Image (cartoon, rainbow, N blue to C red; front, top):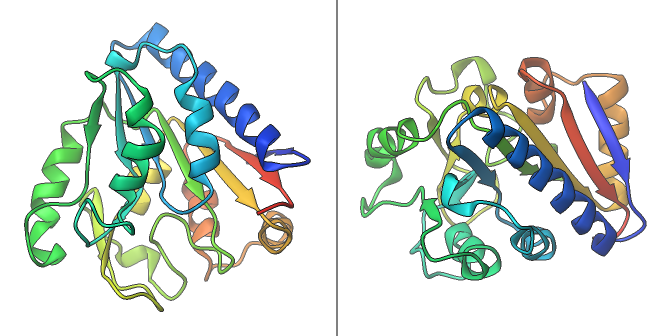
Length: 227
């Protein structure tokens, strides 16, 4: 099930998202001592993560992690960890907990067990997972052409994107789908048209469809035509 919220621009979307995320996390913390927030990389979070950082939340009870990561140094401009630390963590209290996906392993295939163990220490299921949507329908780093039935039983999977210079690690379809709440941020007309199509007619080759078919909870969408 999808609940869609359309906004005229990225600024109003960012505030709408931040209000939703803050309310969701507060509600979780009325039931549980700790919450887990998953955030994506890419360009769009640079708008809404600072809005979220302004929300008055007990950040010492919230652990932040990533939906996926490029296998590059954490200080590289392509690193999702670097982006999240700049646009979210830098604005929060120093004791806010962050769990990255990158390890010291040269090859991400050698790091899967280590990353799985990191993620297994989080309060599960994930409280709020925030995802973007690619024009090809990919979510996190789960891309068309992958077989959803063969995706790892680990909490993470190593991915070689169709067109990209580096390997990636992505949270698994299973751990994403089991999230208590999922927010999907969709920017641009093409992505919104894709969402229109998938909402009416599922496409088994598209990762967003895999998530829609398996999600434990409704997916709340924040969308705008602006990039």
